[in-house]
Amino acid sequence: MTIRVLLFAVLAQKIGAAELSLPLPAGATVGDALAELARLHPAIAEMRGRVATAVGLEYVRAGHPLADGDELALIPPVSGG
Image 1: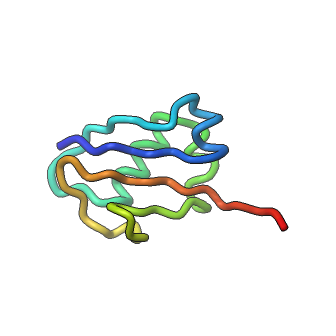
Image 2 (image 1 turned 45 degrees about the vertical axis):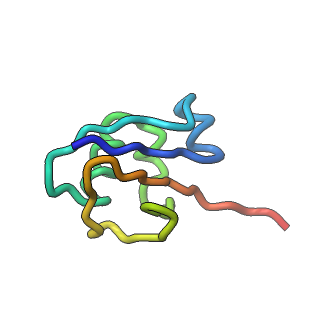
């Protein structure tokens, strides 16, 4: 299966793209996707424990199952005031 990964803010800047296509085995979870993304992109590995994840506009945890064509958003922490 293949999912679409959306990157925001500092992640998009460090990777140089706002969107990636990620092939994964059937039955993969958000955690599996994060592990593969961390392996492929050091910037994601650096922030792995601090990003929020969402699938289809709903925040999800690492154990959430993915399906072919899903859209996984990686949302880095935001600060400001």
